[in-house]
Amino acid sequence: MTEDVEWQDHYGLPPFGNMMQPGPNAAENFVRIGNEISAGIHAALTRHCGPDLSQKRILEFGCGIGRLVMPLRYRHGYPSDACDVSGWCIGYLKRAVSDVRFRQTPNDPPLHYRPRVFHALYSVSVFTHLPYERQRPWLAELHRILRPGGIAVVTTSGYRALRYRREQRRQPYWTGVSDEDLRTRGIIYSDHGVDIANHDGVEDAYGYTAHSPDYIRDTWSDIFEVVEQIPAAAGLQDINVLRRAVQGGKAGGAA
Ligand SMILES: C[S@@+](CC[C@H](N)C(=O)[O-])C[C@H]1O[C@@H](n2cnc3c(N)ncnc32)[C@H](O)[C@@H]1O
Image (cartoon, rainbow, N blue to C red; front, side):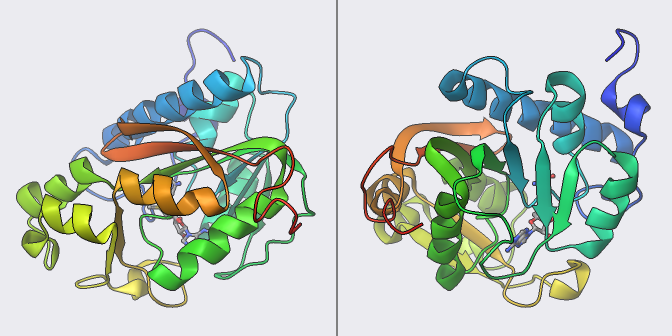
């Protein structure tokens, strides 16, 4: 990295689609949000994995059009690998960021990666779209590909994101969901108003999912140790830091 060049100059900006949405401030928003979220992910990863991640095998699960791959790779030398269901995104990123291994992956597990290969992984704004029945199979799959002791940083939409959907965006369905509803139910999914034709690679059921932090701590701990939860630390979304147990645990013996 050179001092006067930033990641968006180095790689260039992607075409419109995925997280690069057309609009008056499209490029500025892409860069600003990429910077903000990647800083939250980097802080969480370095807190739990040490300062130098450039020699480690690290995956972004659901990388989209590279809004986080680009700043993290350029500034910190990771991720080593990234995947997404979108062939359009992966095709673009293979050309734009040639030193990361990209793979197009299926809508349901398994991934093609061998068990226990990654030191760490991160996944932003993916579990926030998966319907109920896809949540646990994907969590178990991420557990399978992490080394014992490996860290997964996964974002979810908690109370801050719920308030945004309900009060600022006034999105269909979410205007009727209160904080108390989320507290009581723990997880809420709805695909009201979402057209999957706009989401390349997604086969079916891609809506919005909200999780309460208590639900994650109580239910995801069947699979991972939930070691840290930070509200609204990735833009509007919560950061959850999960660790694969070094030994044992329900899913610990599965892979
Ligand atoms: C909201 S975008 C976020 C992209 C990227 N993480 C970012 O923050 O810019 C969600 C991404 O998840 C991808 N996705 C959805 N289901 C997936 C799955 N089962 N496996 C991998 N990627 C998936 C979508 O194609 C999309 O690119």
